[in-house]
Length: 114
Length: 114
Image (tube, rainbow over all chains, first blue to last red; front, top):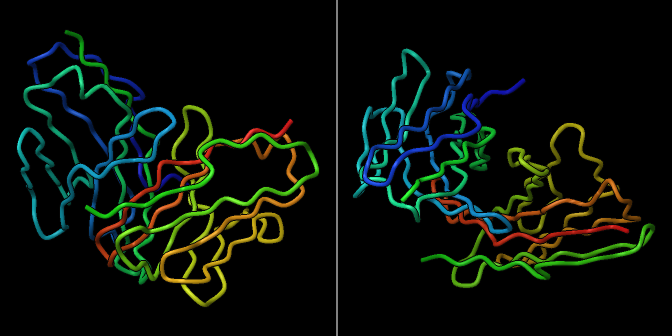
C-alpha cells in the first residue's frame, strides 16, 4: 500500500525553465510534508517542507504547494539549474506518529539540461 | 546545520558474516534514529525506528533478528546485519531526529555481500 506516490519517475527540463515535481498521498492523517533531494550514493538532503495548515511555502527558488482536498503536493523550482539534477523524494509524516516517522514516495529523477 | 555521519561508507563482506554500520549525530542529541534501506532506483524503505535506551520498532516484513539495532546513546545508533547474504546487498541510510519536525540523514552505507 503506497501511501505516498510520485507517479513520474523522471522529468527533463531546460535550464532556466520551471521544474514541477508532483506527489500524491492517500492518508488524511498526514500533517507535515517534506521534499528531499538525493544524489547517487548519498543521503537525502532536506529542501523544503509544509505543514498541512498551509497551502504554500516558499524558500528561494523552491516553492511547495499543498492541495489538501486533492491530497496532492507539488514542488516548483524556478529557475531550474543544472545543479538541480538529482532524485527528488517527497515524504509525509502522520499526525498519529509520535516518532516523526517519514513515509517516502518513489522519487522523481530530475534532469536539467544546460 | 545538523550533521549525521555513517561509518563505513562502503563495506564488502562474505556471505555468512555479520556487518555493523554506525550512525552518529555529530552536533546534536537525537532521541530517535531511523534506519532505511534503498534498493536501486527505488524509494527509501523504512526498516526500523530506534529510541535511545529502548528496543527498536521494526516495520512489517523486516526481520529483527537479522537486522539488529542498538541505540546506546543519544548520538549513536548501530545496525548490524547478521549472517549477511547477497540479497542483503543494498544502500543503508540512517537519519536522526532533532525533534518531531526536523530529521537529518546520514550519507549512507553501501553494503555488498559476496
